[in-house]
Image (cartoon, rainbow over all chains, first blue to last red; front, side, top):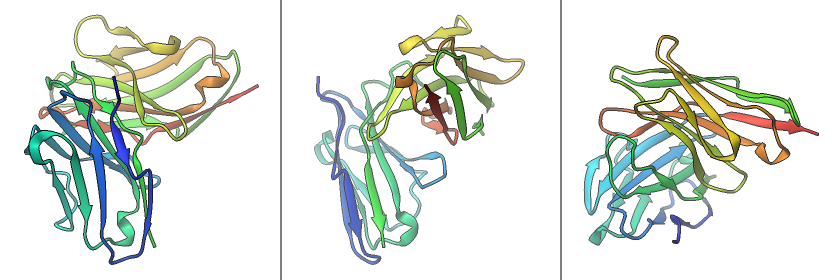
Amino acid sequence: EAGVTQFPSHSVIEKGQTVTLRCDPISGHDNLYWYRRVMGKEIKFLLHFVKESKQDESGMPNNRFLAERTGGTYSTLKVQPAELEDSGVYFCASSQDWDRGNSPLHFGNGTRLTVT
Amino acid sequence: AQSVTQLGSHVSVSEGALVLLRCNYSSSVPPYLFWYVQYPNQGLQLLLKYTTGATLVKGINGFEAEFKKSETSFHLTKPSAHMSDAAEYFCAVSDRAGKLIFGQGTELSVKP
């Protein structure tokens, strides 16, 4: 089975520009998550979709970040306008069911975002 | 609130030596605990997990971890390190809502 796919793998943009990251989860996985790792820090949760609905978006840093999952398949994460502190690696993960961990999260390779 | 502390951001061992990566957690509910590994330019891969039952958990690639409630620890071990084990390792706990809370990661180097 194909894994979680993220693109682009790298993105370098200037402060103030807009960037859209895309995640294709494993087929049939209703749960989709976004996480972020800022350099030198821990991986932090951003939000969780169940199908097309936002289950938990408590980790979204501010309203410059917009996540969508139209049709309950792939998801996009848009940053507009980007700031220097948005630089980091953005991970997407998916799982078939959620019961606190019995259904493991499958992670993509991440998108490395650099804002200059 | 849940939290995870990994002791040591960098650990270096010789090939064939014991690998010990330390993880302590804080959780207000019975914890579900995980170890993930990230090889260069790859995503996070699940090594092993503890949910309920046996406290000694075996994972892939010869790794295992023991859940010790009294010590709030979930240390990762491997009896004999291999060069291919060089990677970054993450301990995580899931909270009530199910999202993962990660430690800061430990980079493991293996010397020949």
